[in-house]
Image 1: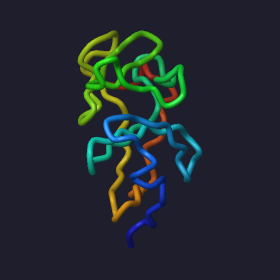
Image 2 (image 1 turned 135 degrees about the horizontal axis):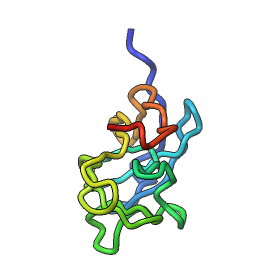
Image 3 (image 1 turned 45 degrees about the horizontal axis):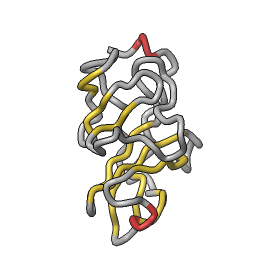
Length: 124
């Protein structure tokens, strides 16, 4: 039996080419939603380096070029489509992906997301 999907937001609520923080309807944790056209990526709002939230200004997760997710604490850069860190103290680590889908104009949480990191140093 499939887990029920949860409505996160409408596609129009996410700026095209931008990002926004959402709250997980299951556990209340912070999520990062990123949009490019009709593609949406979702990650836990947590840097793998220190376990801190990535933003210091609400809904601002992207670097000045808009091409990478940037950690506001230490400037680590992550690829939008994979969550892979390509620069900074956590190179080769990844953001925690959260499965989502689009149904019409609805952004849906596919299943409960992985838990946030409690001890980032324990991550491979």
